[in-house]
Amino acid sequence: MLAGAARGQTNEEIAAALGIKRATVSSTLLRAGRVLGTGSRAGMVHRAYACGVLSGLTPEARPPFRLSRAQTAVLGGLANGSSAREIADTLAVSENTVKTHLRKLFTALGAASRSHAVALAWQHGLLH
Image 1: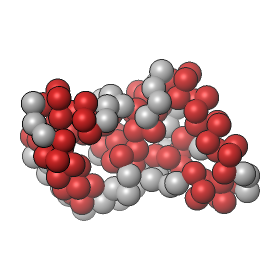
Image 2: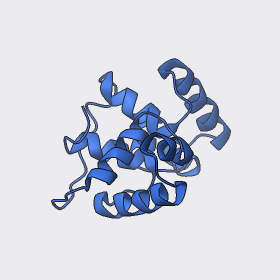
Image 3: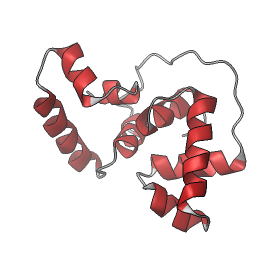
Image 4: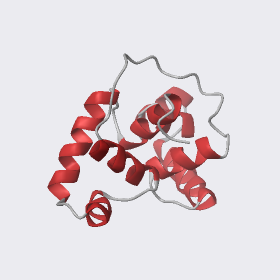
């Protein structure tokens, strides 16, 4: 299920791929979040990579990309499980500015979600 989240899949997509109920995916990811110490899917993916749980996940091919300093800072906030508001407070910018950086980050990485962006960043050496 964490691998599905790392691939940017929704709970519905994960459930369909595994042939289980969506509620089972939701409750299992909630439990995983408690074990990993975060309620954010992006934070879960980050901690799962950091613990080696997702180290065997085949990296997704992406064309070369470069992130701005602001996008890198926002990515760090996502990995910590922070909301856009929390990232904005940390960076002393508006929440709308963070959301703009998020959109540009998703485009640069080809990410479908916050958790997918974190996974791609791990896979391509942007997070450790």
